[in-house]
Image (cartoon, rainbow, N blue to C red; front, top):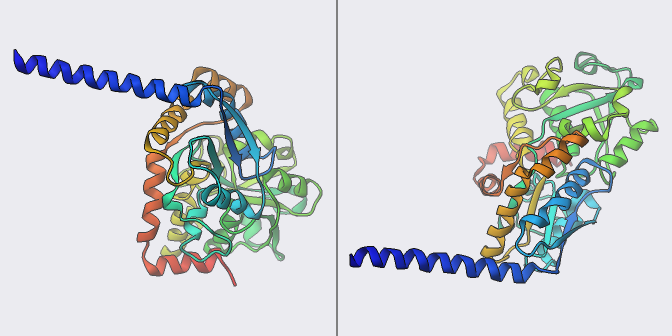
Length: 341
């Protein structure tokens, strides 16, 4: 009997403690505003997802705070990420949305990095994207086969090293030998879309089909998806060739796997500044996961044609912690591709 009473008291104690923590968090967040720092320009794929999430995230956080998106662009996302690491308060009131593949760049010596990605608190990602290459028909290249035989480089819009829209283009040039001229300096997908429309560039690689089929819907009437770079074909792109099928050497396949496919899960990452209290990290991870299952969120996403297949924060954390263990020779090959002299 004594053991039963003791067990009941332990359960009661844990229940009371959980209730007290929930009340404390509700009191903490009530009436406050969470800043969602978006590292890329308004109107692009990242911004589209961030604003959708912001409209629903707050109702899954105790106290129901407001979530406001703030675009902080520049240097391929580095301005925002450096801010999140060095200046943002770790108080649970600032969340960053950025391309987590920048995490690999710190091991390759990318200039401008002022953070250690392994120290961020990883909340999750809304989508594990299918990376694609889109080219304007005006470029004269309507298929991968034509691209491989092109007599002059195809101009691809880019942002900066450490962003998928630049990194994927460089890796594909190295792995497949597609003639490419990368034009960098754009602030986001929306800017590259405009540049393609005006004829400044022929298209882009490293875009996610899940977002571009929505945000580039009009442009796709005059453009072609000529390549997909995921590990397997997307059901909606069954006739578009896979990069893996054209990678002849093992080195090329490794570059595609590590440099594009495994980084894909990090693509739309949401993080908290380092040293954010564990209880707040747990609260926001749970809120993010609940948002991804929210019927109203999913209905709005479906209505807008936005695809969600979320990646939990724990998985993102494990991917980032694995970068330090990459073999030196593979890291060297990635560096020579992603950070050309």
